[in-house]
Length: 371
Image (cartoon, rainbow, N blue to C red; front, top):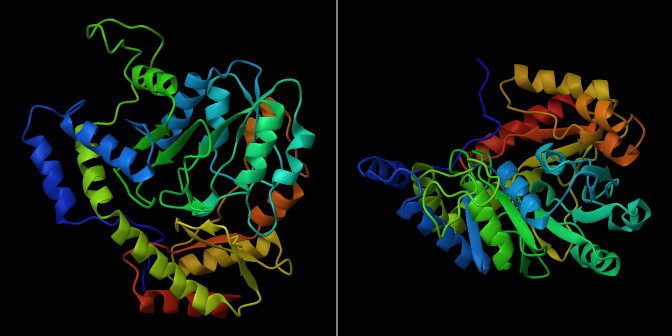
């Protein structure tokens, strides 16, 4: 019988369970004290003025664009190598994501390509902190300054990461985090906006709660809004996860180190290059097959790993090749060759705090057998 090893899993303890039960014993299941506590813990950890919890990282990005005034026809420069939510958030507001290719080693938005993509309709840059690392934020911010562009940082995969000592999520006018169960911390589902801008915070708080005016009554709606609230049940999990954040991140780093030690000399796969100025916060363990392997070889390998009980996946599929993006925006295969070559050869291996060193050894042994 094959040994089953899951691709991902949350790091939950009795503390999270007890916190949820405690909330369920109260009448305040939403917009209660746990929401305020979770947000306050985030402001203190990230060292920002405001943290606004919402029901997903996707919602966090959407609210940020609304608060930044993104409008129909506005263009936002971003990466095609990301989870689709980053670009979808632009389209929610009628904007157009304009992609630039990625660096072949760091897999991040290639800042040297940005200026060639700027047009009179460009309004913002959306850097994404891929897999818990960061792109060249100095270069991105300088380009934004030179061209008077807004910057929204998608840090949904990067809680705890930093660039030159500055925490992920704090480089733009706002940043967004996500708390899906495979993230560094989880609330089941959830997200968080961080910003030092009072106006962005005010608009985001209002729009996550049906556009309500916080100074007026429950049925006073100052603007168009959404139900993007995060319940106190979810926030209770988040509070306990934040109490354990350093422990959780240390465990993830340990698992990553086990992989890196075992794959360091394996020439048939490459790992994401982490720049010296970046302190990564490990989100996933993704490796790239060498160019000797064709996309069909990668897909075959995924199938064989699955047959052996090893959780795995391709990670990511290029956003510009999703059918909806091709139909609506006219993107085609060949538009972003670095991304396409990378995405065709990536494999996400099991990565979570429940893994033992023996589990990692087993995964790497099976991978080597099948390569």
